[in-house]
Length: 311
Length: 317
Image (cartoon, rainbow over all chains, first blue to last red; front, side, top):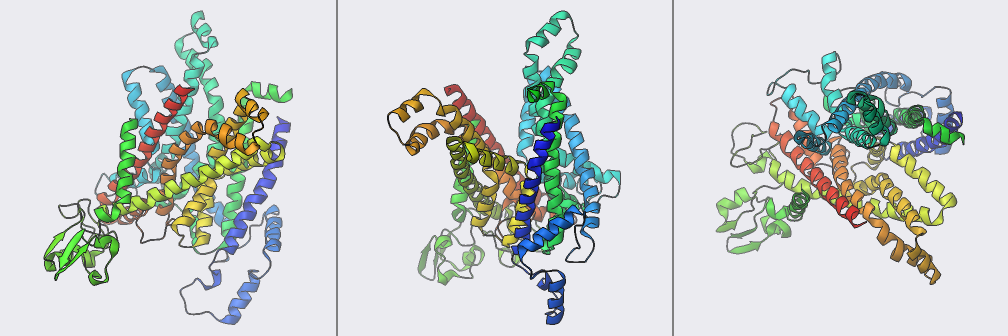
């Protein structure tokens, strides 16, 4: 286990560097000058030169990247180029909202997909099992942001049933629609994995033997088949975390939640490179972290893997 | 199911190809003041500049209108100047799917949006599959360091959240062209094809017929292109079919964020932006429903075709 974590970390650091360096180059080489984007009349040339020097806009890119990286190691993400607020504070605030929404969405999708997958596996062959399967296939083809817009239309505007608030993230009621819409495609995807896994586990001799011994069917399903099905689920889930995180951009846009996605979108629009870089660093860390977690979790649920690693 | 999927996709392809004949500001054929114009929608003759089917209907001796007599960019000033009340207008006999906030016909924009959306999706899938197959084959044939590098690249690129990466790149391009969007999307979507090709080529490389070809003196390139790739392609083709659907989803998500082909070019995602913007005021449901159905129909159709192909290839083996 320790060795695996070390190997992963060994790869994670260069990957982090490559991703942030690429983003750094793109964020800084993008056309458009952060100092000349405002709609006001042409700014004073001296002031522009001063600001340019303060923001280090005329230094070579590599040196600036190395300094940025060194600062990140010290926990300093710099100041926003637009309003001089600390990037770390902006990110902490946005991150809390995104983590709340995508964390709830991930939790919901795990519970829902395990429940649905078990249901599908137990009612295998029933007529409405096919209907449920078709409904899930249908769900995976429908864009989640369309579902979100439709949900707002039907459940938040006077035209439908205004049960939920339209925009923002102030009360628990605000959470219902964004979480459901973000979980939607993940549920459709994960259910397939759980169903396949349980169905495959149910065909194994150990299951038949357990049933023959007189173990109740429910216990066989939950104690024998489900753990086997969870092994692939854990890996898939770990690799899927960054996508849920990033997928929340669209959901945040639809529901007006000031999270990481909208922060990045705004920063990109205003050429606020320090904020873009802060978001990129967090995204890269989340990506690498969830890959590591997926590996560790796979080891935890599947003892065969650690036995193989020891050999 | 597969037949239905193929039919839906073929239908959309025809709509995309014939967009100018289905919905345009100029008619299919018209005779004005003794001069006859055939397909002015494509030729755009100078004599008809500034005219629309609405104005021509009154002046022309005869006219053959397009099925949807509006262009995708026509706004309230030229589309229905005498109409009472401000847009968005609900679907009626004139605008079958309604109009958006500035009076543009939703059906006309859906038809022309199909062109952009499908072109992007097809371009992305072709380019990314080509790239993936080449890289995957290279990794499998060369092995060693090349294999390690490609595999690591696949792993990193397939876990890194594409939407965020795309946001940065597309923003760096500022008002990106269609080609730029295709290249950028393809650069993030090649990993699946590479992974599948690598596994298949590695599996096939030790088989007797390949060894025989090598023994007969076939060059590495000949082995690759004549013996290995044709046999390695079925799973790649299946995955490419599914990829068309996810490219459509990704393109519409990007244009929903305002990061795809620059407006006022109609795309399906951009139509949903209109829907989102008008939610607060009148709740123009027709703006949300129809583009969403269009996206879902393409995605579901590609999935049906993909599953059909998968079953057929599996049966062959």
